[in-house]
Amino acid sequence: MDSSEFSYLNIEFIFLGDRPDAAEVVRTALADRRLLGFVGGTVEREHATEVCAQIATVSPARDAVLYRVDAKGKLREGSRVTKLVHELKNSTEADYVLLDGEEIDGPTPDEDLLGDYGSTTELVHGRKLKGSELVAASGLEENVLTFWNHGTGLMAMSAEPVSTATIARSNRPFLSLTRNGNTLSALVTGAGSRRDFFPKAVHYHVDLERTMIIEPEAGSPAAQRLAELEFSLLGWEAVDDQTLGEFLSDQPKLQEALALVKAPGSLKNFKRFVALLGFDPRSVDYLTGKPLPENIRVVATGGPVKTIKAALAEHEREATGLAKLLYRGGWGPKALITSSLAVLGSGALAHLALAKCSKLSSVPKPLRNLLMIACYADGLFYLGKGILGAVKARGK
Image (cartoon, rainbow, N blue to C red):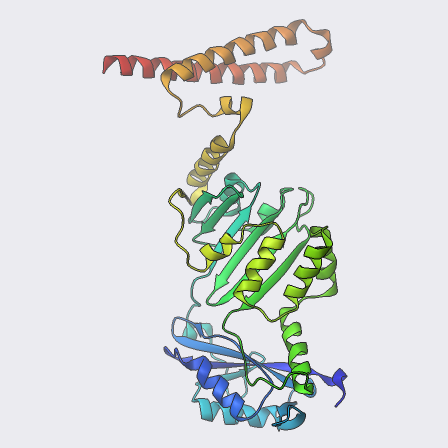
């Protein structure tokens, strides 16, 4: 058989109601027919249970001929797809069997009948990642962000997905991990710039419950075709090799990463891939259910006022050096009074310089006035707040 004819089909089995044994039922039915391919893990929906299988075919035709594996691992021509789907529907007692997304026996079930998928867990991690960026990336919809830091950069889990495109506009690499059921995905985005809406990135995913329908003899033609199918399911392309090479300058690490993404997926390989790209592999542990550390912070967003307030609070937390003078709301009365006097004094010196220095005469007068008003207003506001706080504290 000519390898150029190699293709595969997605066959999706849908059982109405809760069927925790669905994946094993499907695998058994496919193994009984000696088919070549994989069965994914059980996917739970609100009103249904789904299992997706990828089965190798001799050709990409609509009613293609499927590969069958004999006892010696050789490839043979099996049934045609249409005939097989009818047989599988009866033997598995599935309510629907979809061939590349379409039911061949009638109307395809609508989403209302099947219900929503289970929730997706998301974790974002980066050595220089900022909480304020994540607040902005969560948009104006209600969301809850949980932050913590292990010394290898900020980690954050969100109740609702955040916009990775918004985070990517920074020039700092970051990792976005998602988990849906037993499928794990890693999106690694490299350093870009604010001009790049989509900086270079690589995507790697594994289904922890994917199993072979049957395991052919090592080195057999069937084993070779199964390896081809496994690699095609990863969706890894030559451009991803190039991007990964740009992310990893260390050649031994690059070769190890390239080997991982082209090998059968596993949790161990997934964590190693994350580590090779310079991220903390403990992020994967948290994604898969490890209890969060004690030093977490929970930030709620939702609507313009609440989200802006949360973003400003994160900016204040992240401020360093002179920038801290812009965020003094939580300071004590003595610190507020001292810092405000310093701001007012600096403002007066700046005002004098703008008025007397010929080199600064090019600054438009309205702009100079605006800067001075902002400086004096800031100083006077926090000075008054500090004095009021000191009076209250003395009264107590």
